[in-house]
Length: 237
Image (tube, rainbow, N blue to C red; front, side):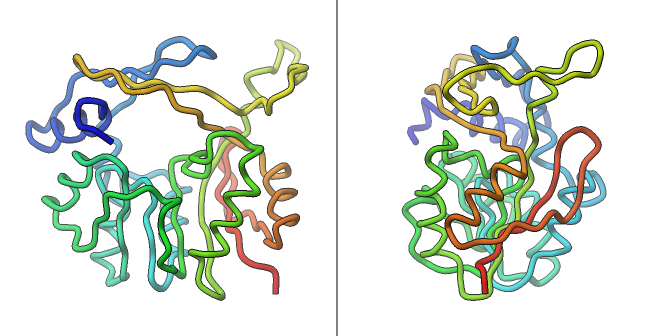
């Protein structure tokens, strides 16, 4: 990713340098413009939500923190003695993580990795990096390559069905070809406008179906307060 197309990285770098950042705007044709609070990427363990705390408690072995951002999860694990590598496609984010003291940092796309890990962390809805749900079979094929025997993928996600809930509490999902949790995002920071990208949020039942078809099992580790959840995926024995 080129620095001039890296709004998230610019925001992270500003916050690291100045302890504050301008507004990081998230555009989407599905929603009104939203502001992403950059400071959450610098949280310590006590400031993290329960789902993320639980994920870190379940981490073991050689670990890969995917889409690590400013590296808050990697820093905590490193302090606990975990052999953790942080990975991100943002060059500015990688630079900040190195300056923050994370020992192992890679500027690399997850789908180009070949090394194996015992724990893969995809927090803050990182499972959606495949872009669209129909690419999940390809995602699981790559998981076969990078997940060590006996390893685990830990992630959190949300079921966006609540967006289609009426005043009576009835949820009626839209009649459309693509999965209702698929979105398109575009980030903007100062004069930097990133490229649009696909992402998805997925309900646990749908993901469980894809996992089983690929030879994996899904286990819910913790439920959140609003249609969100933390889960673990492991290879079927």
